[in-house]
Length: 277
Length: 273
Image (cartoon, rainbow over all chains, first blue to last red; front, side):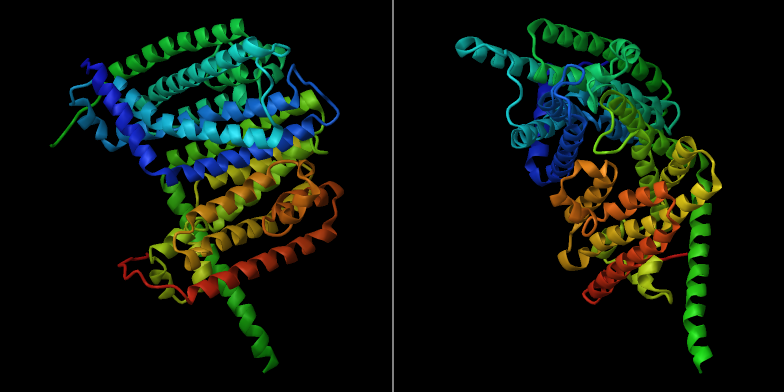
């Protein structure tokens, strides 16, 4: 395994980010679809909360803000699989492997760097749309005032940003592991579809507290809630112990996902045979 | 003389029916040539739709009806939308590529052929994953309403105008390319609106928005009205929906013909076999 310097990976990430930002028009499609989804789901929640003030511990305002944040990883970090899979199938992987850097790490830096730009744009849009639709998100420390309130808000924002970055990282390594299965069957989209739909149901469209008790208990032992539930939960129901626990569990799943991606790459790349020049 | 006048339009309808049947059979053969891809896309689309079914099941279990719709209502709306959407893309698979074809000057090859350009270009492709959408509606119907033949027949009769309205609306949005050049942003937006608004209960939209759902974004005619007709088993409203579909098809065709006058050849060398 080759290992490039940290500088190599930072340059890859920043180049990719600048490349995305150079064509801001390309964000228009995602921004439009995201705004449409948020609007429709705000109406769905308005319908669901007709006659109820709280469901599974969430008020309507919390549910709308939850959806706004939970959709950010889907829009910002949901497409790594396709670019990686394309590189595998087109043979581009043969050129990338010959270069003086670690394939998995370089791709992580490059892909995450580019998608951070999109996630940032979607986050800014989400905040604007959320303010327009339901007003401010619930306070991080209800009842607190002055400095205590400001500290809680700053803490929530900090944890939210960290949790979104961890969600992006976990998304990358899980999708990379799935994409690299193309070393075996070339038609590997089905694996990603299953992954994508489980992510959607377990914590993106709906908080896991809404799931039946047995399903919620099972869900916390899978990586899916840490892809979108964790940052969304931090945003709408912030408490320091829970935020620490969620971020710690996200980190543990990242370790597992890195191990998995590296194992798939290690076994899969042995099957690669390069012909021609 | 009168008999001859009558025979001509009927003959043309028969000729176009034969042509569309041949295009469908050809596209189907091409699809089945890549069986693994077909099976993957078919089940992938079923899975995609089933994920939303899981969401609605969990939500309605918690909250009760949403926007006046219970779980079976939402599932039936999904059934109508997915079958109509699937049918539109199986038969008129080029419908969401029309704008790009116009923009790239790719209509030349269709202009040289004897059949109507609009029908020819729209039906010259099929979308593989659309088979999954098409089947999903029938599966949902069997699970929610049983296997009553009359209901199946009514469902199929309602899905046909739905498919025509989908195809006509998407084609109209794509035909904007004649007037705007690159209209992909506008046509994607209209397509996204049409699909997204159709898949959620009608009652969640305020009265201020409902008029749009029965005009510019005709979700009402592909989802909400078919649901009402289906639940009341009112066959009498099927011809009304067919008439509505005919109006949308006529308007979409008119827009295409208007745009065709502005079309400029791309001087491309294309071949159609």
